Length: 201
Image (cartoon, rainbow, N blue to C red; front, side, top):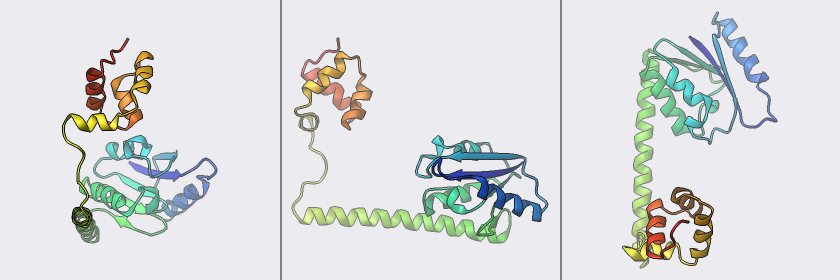
């Protein structure tokens, strides 16, 4: 199956230009698009919230994915690399119109896949190193690292929120929903409710 993928970030943008570019590209190469996938969504959304995420799961060996440019696939370089690497491992050929990339089962693609994997590993190491350096700097400055231990932790987080929690419990709001609203763990809410006797009614 040959898939054409089109994405725009807002409903003020049009998909016509991307479709025209892909059609022109496939016409020159005698490729017929079997299925078009179009969506209006930001690339910052999680893949499982996008049609493209479902498409990636459905793609099978031998399928072809064509898009106008790499930026339509992901929110940043690392995500795009991960997507392309996954496609190549599954035996899916990816064509991009503007960059003229043809990534499939060939030596150039394998070299790129290696570069993608290496770049991802380097990025992970850099993030880890930056985190360690930041923690070391804070420690040297005398700052206490980590969250408070034991019962004190959840009490500090929910200090002065008792009335707010009572009102939500009265409205039958679940612990999970309360935890999301207050940006704490569900168990933190449950423990706080139990200790303060804020029984749900």
